[in-house]
View 1: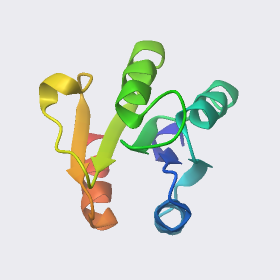
View 2: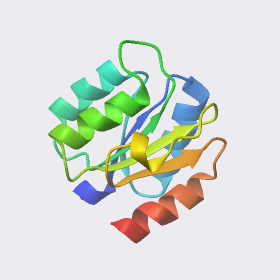
View 3: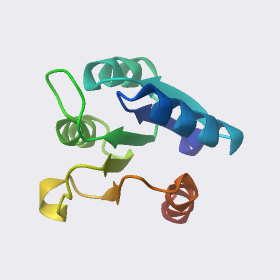
View 4: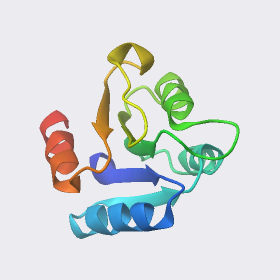
Amino acid sequence: MSERTILVVDDEPLIRINLADFFHEEGYQVFEADNAEAAILILEANPTIRIVLTDVQMPGSMDGVKLAHFVRDRYPPTLLIVASGAVKLSASELPSRTMFVAKPFDPRFVLEEIERIV
């Protein structure tokens, strides 16, 4: 079941809720956070989370790229997906084994990539 547990991190409520609903309908257990600090608390409380989908630009002390590095360092098996509509990140800016997607994106594409990797 842990492969089908995802944390969606986005400060835009409509985007976050739509993604959460999509993954829930696809059979995933979904957790949601609106910033990196909340995401870290959720990860600490739920060690079964193995997929994190995060936006880059968020309020708080940590953006999505820093969150991705934090997750990679502390939860190495976690599949990371970093999304942004404002910046295009290169592989060198992201932790290893991280997928970048440009917003707007089709969540079905992300789901296909997750299922291909997992």
